Length: 277
Image (cartoon, rainbow, N blue to C red; front, side, top):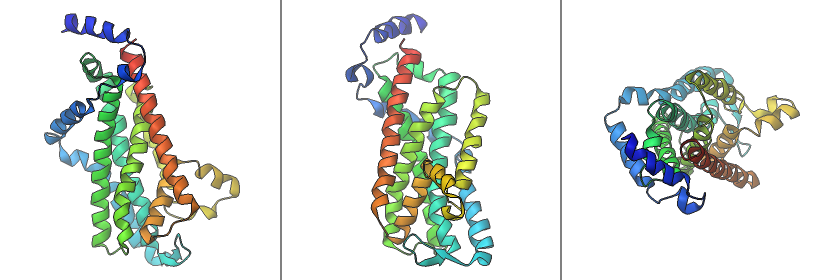
């Protein structure tokens, strides 16, 4: 196997870093492999990331919500506390699915399975691998979002047809986090660095206006929170939940578009640097 892969990798290393050298147009091969893997995977493990925001919704939205009462919604009209945090937790659910797949799974494929090295020894390019893996992370984020939206429907927290638009937005949020997560994973050296993931995600979840309005913070803290990706996802989901839009809606969308483009670009170049030097 090494005798075959050696000359092939050497030829790929000599390619100039053009689009043709980075992308072979065959990301579907990576996606097909991913679906074959999850078909035989332990779905109980896959579903674990879905339950965390559901537990928060039950504990905070239903439990503490009885004490909080009504809070101002995106359009200024009062809504129940459960309806206030539900869209934020949907954004969190999409983030969790994308991060778990785009970081943990990718890390072990990258560092221990040496899977990408084998893929790049074929006709696949670095961008094919990046797009394929990001799609699989996107799929997991989408599953979490669909499941969580179904929970909201059962609980009577879906009050507008605009709520259906929360699913494509959940895909956009998952795409941004999956792309950036995979890019960050490509720089990790050891599995100990995976501990940094919850270290980053937990504060971002708690302080991105998921459970209470951002206005409780001083102005300089608000500015820091507004730079966080989850805050943009939370605000966008809240606007969709009641069908209210303003000038910031486009800003939220463009934030995740830029995040996704940067993430895919970094992953592609990193895979080339790691395996096609």
